[in-house]
Length: 97
Image (cartoon, rainbow, N blue to C red; front, side, top):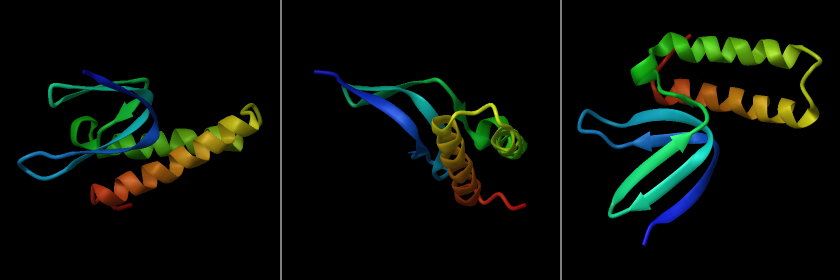
């Protein structure tokens, strides 16, 4: 019997032969069936795939959004949490700046 999960904002760790791969997931769904995990997400950032510069570009874009006045309090809270998650992702991936 499959199990469905609603995903929020967080870091997912994938176990691989060469070591863990970390990705940032922002919303979506996960399905576990027959020992297989399938993830469908609204937004994902994987430095191992998209490159380390993508992390810094995303963080800069969020900082600009937080400086503006258009975001609602809920959006600002989400963006602040996402910015903190990007910092943690950079730390886990050994990205320095």
